[in-house]
Length: 185
Image 1 (cartoon, rainbow, N blue to C red):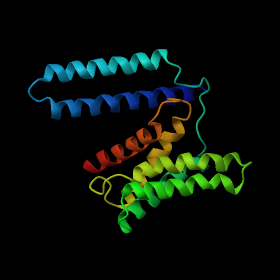
Image 2: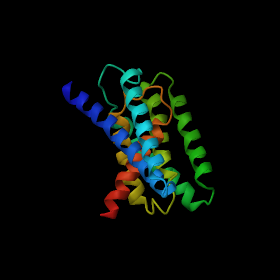
Image 3: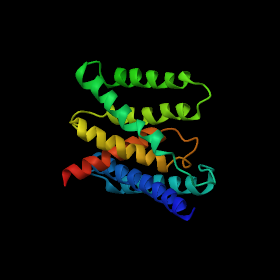
Image 4: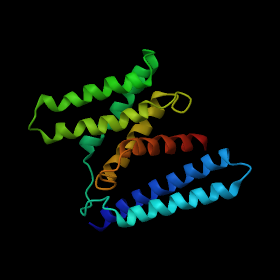
């Protein structure tokens, strides 16, 4: 039980640090001449995120994570979307729509299956990885690794950020970002 709480707090910290880093990069590129406004903006947004985390009910009290048999679908969704995007020239939005629509039909195979009801969420998390630009995600191996990491982040963030939009995209972004940074090294 204690390890799950550590993982939950670590996931929250990773998301917060990623948000602050992205804000710093955006501010650095847009406010080169007036860094005071950029620093003030970052500080205000960081304070708002911290206050929201502390006082809003964004988490369940239990510290569970999603099973591997569910999150393994995230890299599958990523690879499918990437394949359709790259090899059919339909574009990443149509590719995401195709994979997402097909994923939403999976629970219809057996309406009583709790497992089948969880698969579309994992696939759609992976779809966000597959939607990434080919300049960032140049190969199937890159997309596979980013999809695996996005699935892992999705698993560990099962009970955090409940009701907050953008969770699947954020988990996918973290997966792509980490694999991209590893490739830079």
